Amino acid sequence: MTTTATNETAPPHARPFLADAGWGEARIEPLAGDASFRRYFRVVRADGTSAMLMDAPPPNEDPRPFLAAAHYLLDHGFRAPGILAEDAAQGLVLLEDFGHRRMRDHLDTAPDDEAPVYRDAVSVLANLHRAPAGPFRPYDLNEYLREAKLLTEWFCVAHGLAVDDDGYEAAWREVMEPVLGAQARHPGGGVTVLRDYHAENIMLLSPDEDGFEAFGQGLLDFQDALVGHPAYDLVSLLQDARRDVDPALEQDMLRHYLPHVDDEAAFLADYARLGAQRNAKIVGIFVRLSRRDGKDRYLDLIPRVWDLMERDLAHPALAPVARWMDANIPGELRAARGATAA
View 1 (cartoon, helix red, strand yellow):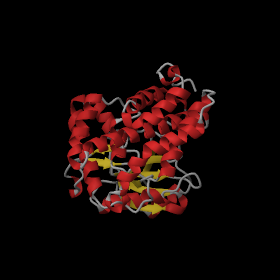
View 2 (cartoon, rainbow, N blue to C red; view 1 turned 30 degrees about the vertical axis):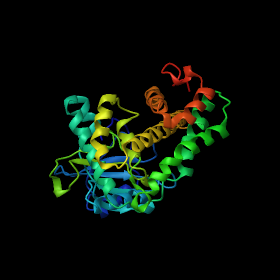
View 3 (cartoon, rainbow, N blue to C red; view 1 turned 45 degrees about the vertical axis):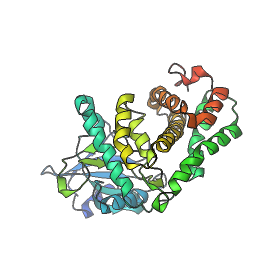
View 4 (tube, rainbow, N blue to C red; view 1 turned 90 degrees about the vertical axis):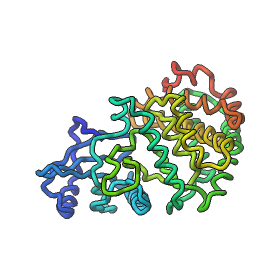
């Protein structure tokens, strides 16, 4: 995370919270926000030590899912930020500060590090998928369908398209059936899925820091964790809505993960299914962020996401959804020149 030049101030109840935690005199610096109501601040003591303050204000936010996921990850040897203090009722959490070395920013300045950094991120997932599934609700068909429908509810509506909603749901039901079967075959009904695992939510740390076995990568933004399919977070990482990942690198990283699966062809088909589902969701979310929340900057990312989705739709496993797309969404709206006209 990097400091942003804004006039955002912490909520009034932050000062007493910090005082109770032993940080009462710390300086509070606002940090750049993202797509949610959560805000983050860096708090810095006079001696230079720092921590992160999360403001997750009720009723729009609830820090308890974040805290549950953080404790699960820490208990299993993964590098979530340590919890220094918490007041869930007021939406405040004081966290360990992972510093400034975000994966995205590091690779922007050191592109030669791309392969080893991504390989480490894939290795973190392989270790996470060997751990017992966390105490999270299942990534079930209703959730997959709800997310996929964000495309029709927001993107299609924004473009004035009258589409076959029933056919859309039926296509996704058919496509996602093998994914649900694969999840069910895992002990515990699946693996822990962080759901927003990408280069802007991974911090690069010293690999030996505090004795954690986490390949030097700190994890952020995991409050929406579910128990689902191991391909989901791979898709999130390798089909990044915010950063170009070369298809050759994507294939190299898949080869790095595939020794951990029993049936490579089935896994790659599920990877394409989940890629298309996730990218459909993201297109809808980015339009929603613009139309509902006034965050128009996300529209510029939509062409990349459509390009990723088209690659996924080319897989035979996506044939029902691909046919629906061809029948309902004109090609010019799926191309870069039309994808952002929302």
